[in-house]
Image: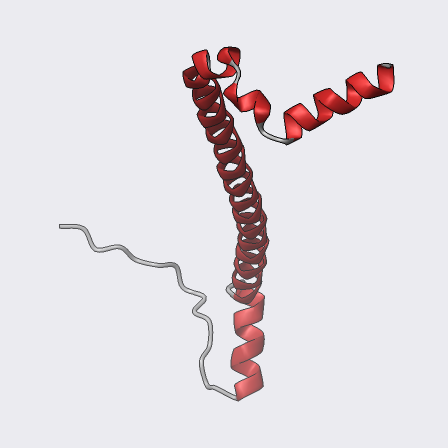
Length: 108
């Protein structure tokens, strides 16, 4: 008896007979609205996950750019030191000498 009742309700649901009942027909607007809200939530979550993934990749790219900037700045600072410039001048055999006289500023 119990098995027969389960079988009948199963056939009723999957056979489509449940869609013709008064309860379903009277509340069709509610079910359609509920379905639309579910789709909106799913699409919102999907776009949120895409945006978060993009933000993470941009943060990683920014971190790499910062490290590269620090490396270039460090190399530039190292190369512009007076001792490094003197090494480069002597390495290339240029006849440039550093002045021992102080700098004079001309004022108006």
